[in-house]
Image (cartoon, rainbow, N blue to C red; front, side, top):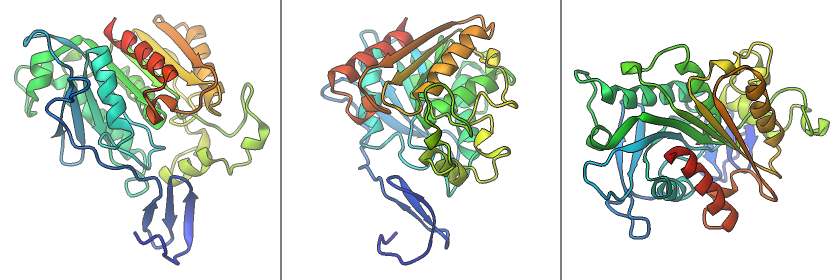
Length: 323
């Protein structure tokens, strides 16, 4: 929309978006659209865009193969962007996912869920669940879905992973909890979950968080009220606050291992640490790994995947997926 509009602002989520009272949305953070490629000349990765349903799209990534019948780990990935910006095709997330594909030698499905506020939460959660169900359905011989040949030929469903960055990590957490209640098609099991700088918040500070950030005006509060205005419990809804009284136990995570990746300067890091510690103490039987990168901030490895610390973190993510 025209950035010179005089309409009254309903939600100012600078530097992400502004929502006006007339219902129009101005996305302040815009990144260029990167087209898919049959072969990235640097990484050797192939990518293509597909439709999962009329509402849900995705970009698929296939690493360079040494064997045309090679079976690969499968990662269903959810991009970040505070539920309101970005996509798998953006100049932020496409290069990162391409690099991760090559490093992990994994088949990655990067989900294009619908964005708030035009499509308020919980729509993104449902879109993401639809995508995971579609991926899992590839193991069923007689199914009504249109199967993708990359997934059918190269997907190793004994090594199925779910992961995401920021709001995408929030979605990944929810999806793996849901898989513990609603079995996936073909009784497919999720092997691992990675949460990179997860977007969790609440009404009260925990750990080293400052009370000054809990006056209700923090960007996380404003994003949540814009993205999910009808959320029961508001900022303490279990989808944004996994430590709230009504939140399901983390023992319900339907996977065997979890990797939580955080950054020292990220204001959300104390909640990521609490998540890992709570999971370890919960009686959940899986393996928990926690990585905190010194001197870095929220999603630094996506913002610039070519720094030394970003490369190191991507290698850790890749190792988690490829083990």
